Amino acid sequence: MSDDKQPTFTLINNQTGEESILPVVEGTYGPHCIDVRKLYSQTGYFTFDPSFTATGSCKSKITYIDGDEGILLHRGYNIKELAVKSTYMEVCHLLLHGELPNEAELKEFSGHITNHTMVHEQVKSVYQGFRRDAHPMAIMCGVVGTMAAFYHDSLDIWDPEQRRISAHRLIAKMPTMAAMALKYSKGQPYVYPRNDLTYAENFLHMCFSVPAEEYKLRPPVVRAMERILILHADHEQNASTSTVRLAGSSQANPMACIASGITSLWGPAHGGANQSVLEMLDEIGDKKNIPEFIKRAKDKEDPFRLMGFGHRVYKNFDPRAEIMRESCHEVLEELGINDPQLELAMELEKIALEDPYFIDRKLFPNVDFYSGIILKAMGFPVEMFTVLFAVSRTAGWISQWKEMMEEKSLRIGRPRQLYTGEAERPYVEVSKRK
Image (cartoon, rainbow, N blue to C red; front, top):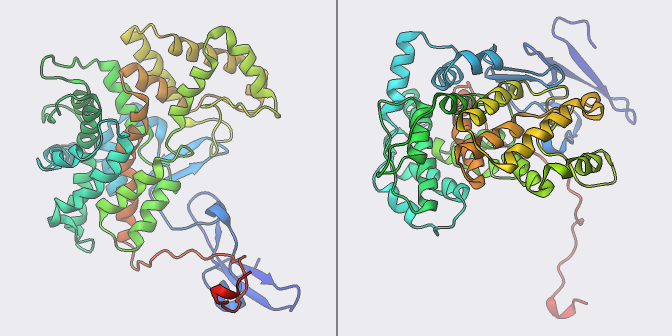
């Protein structure tokens, strides 16, 4: 490494002896990055990094994760403090604008969101075009993208005011559209949003209220929904967030960009983890079968895995899980649900937390283990779990998009490839092909 003021790396071609000096870009926390943007012009080589797991694709001031230490920060604030002390509206303001709002700012921001929760009446007709048994995520992909056809007045991505309005509209309308997807699948009438309810209360009301009977808002359930929204609001440069940024780099409108994020989130390797937990519990079936499945989970030759335990990013513990666990037990106690699957989950949690195998390997229950249990207890069908994820993550997606649009220079994303196909060859007439 150079002794110059700016650290650099010297890359030496051991075949030619040629040297390339690459600058190092330093961040507040985490590994520094080698700036390889001029590597090709200097050497004729690209870097090869499938899945981009060793590549910093952007600079961001929004979210920081230290997986080894179990740290998640939003704009410098620890997720544990935010989940316990803040509301989702405060966290949305923080992600979008960089600071927690004071009382006046929070009132103004919440008012803007509340005033945008209604969707255009013609949006109802979009839902009617789907089969009754369509997956809610398929509906969300279509409906969110369709928003660009209804809100022409905020699609100028170069206008800061229109960007702000689009951000507010997306955060505000996502719960309404998600609740409409749920009601459509049930054959129930849509429920309009209410301005006298909080964001979390309003979402629960729209999902579960019916004209014949008012939905009773229970504080532990509302608190759990608030925490679910906060804990999933943003998670750095994951697959769906990177998808939003890549779509945005083409100068696509924000509605289209968020719709692209939803499509990426739909993949079971990304947004379907909490659904996989309940599917695993179905496979286990009964508490008496837990020892057998614990044994299978320890067997490297057995493909069975305990879903909801451990995390790809967090190597020691998921900082969100502790908060979610508390809410999980609060909700189950409040609702007094006698569900064998939920009892099975709690027994599995107890055994895994006491088993040296899981303790030694830091395979503790993660946020998905508890969120799936909570959502089922609340009454959400399994196919709505990823939709709930999208409702929460919209704040992070639009904040990341907004940050990218505010950079001094916006360039379209264009990953390179390592071509391994056929070399150029002559065309052969069809009659002469063997």
